Image (cartoon, rainbow, N blue to C red):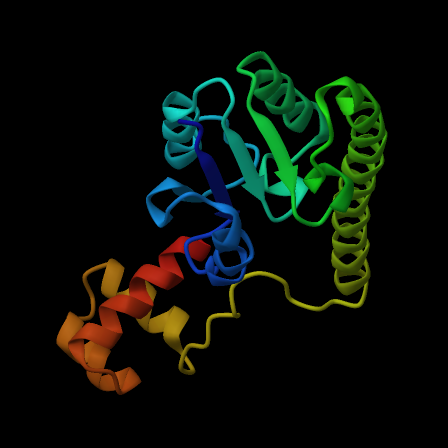
Length: 201
């Protein structure tokens, strides 16, 4: 018996898989055959993906929402598509309608040829989009820096005379309790601020 699998992936644990799940569920044999990962597409050792590959047999079909769910870059995507081809697993990409078509065996080479062209275009576009986003981020950071804007963690806010009291405390001329009273902090806040401050030194 051949099986229809589904694969869904997001890049971080905070992201939600529901949209992709709803897209693939109509096509798969059972929910048990939907594998998922919350991991970057550059990671080749994704547990869900690797377990799915081990479970697949010749004649099975894989459904995914979009081509970039397989991997983060064109080379990795092509590598996985070649792997599925060798395993004789058909890959159907919901966002690329031609890959969803079933044709007589003697016409499969035509569909494969069309799909290869389309997949090449899609992967190239996806990769270019990632490059563009990274370039915009770099440009934004440079512009912000040139305007003197702070990037990264919020600037540490400390009471007046903190530096003076901190030096006295470190030199043993001021007790921690006295330091806390002078800056108006309780114990937990005080030591949290000390830790943050020392990370900036």
